[in-house]
Image (tube, rainbow, N blue to C red; front, side):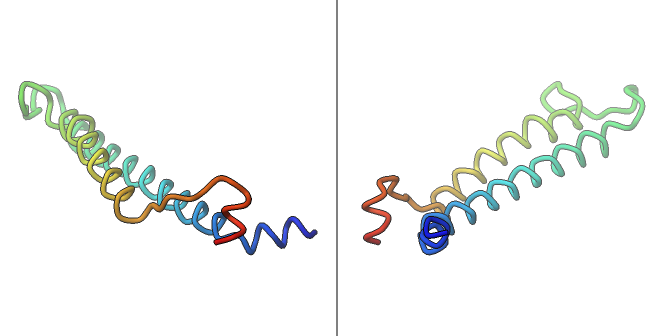
Length: 95
């Protein structure tokens, strides 16, 4: 019981939960991006595909561009919203 109370008072758990939710949001966004382009543009007959840099447009936008967008989003999120949290128990209690 006492450790549960300490855990709830510790700011590190609140920060970790917020950052975990941000990570889940990024993963969901990545899946929606991939699914929308892969199945939105890829449901046509291969004879009707358009190509970007020699790749089918559905593949380029879902896999190549999606990867680049996600890398940039993760960098942005980590620099803007993530904070450094001390792992030492003593440091966490002093904060």
